[in-house]
Image (cartoon, rainbow, N blue to C red; front, side):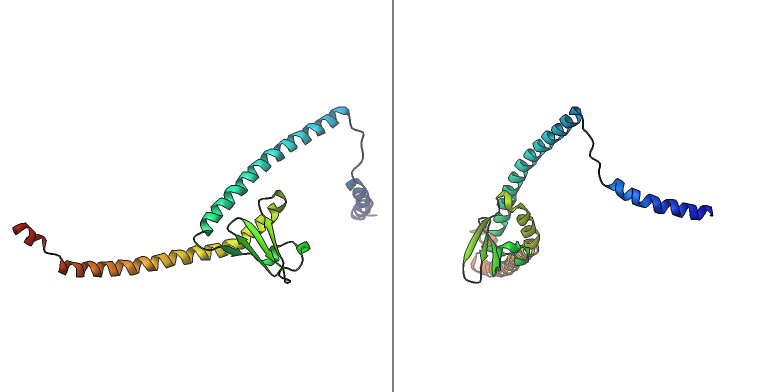
Length: 178
């Protein structure tokens, strides 16, 4: 038997043993191991508490800023029904309103309001945020464009009216000689 064949046989014997090793073995743990585990759990729990508090604050600030932006632009933003949980059933329409509520309309005319500030809706809030950003960007750009158009129009009209108004005003030179 060549060395190469021997190595192949050894590998074929070792591979099933590797699979067995993939299953974690249950070992007796010392009291110190249990204390370390409990300390890790306590530390992680404290971090969860801190992160949850920060997340709650950020959600409130996010919605407040979003709603300030929405107020001059629109009363609601459409939300794709594809981002909604399947367990909500067949939904006809979904919109985010000025109060930060998700308004759900069902085919039978029934309406449901979802408070997106609730902890249980955080993943949904993220999905909705991704979904509405392109729409919000278009609304802001459209609003800016409308204002620019008005400013250009008013600027042109104002300059022309100022030229016409000079005809009705006495010259400064005439006023000084009087």
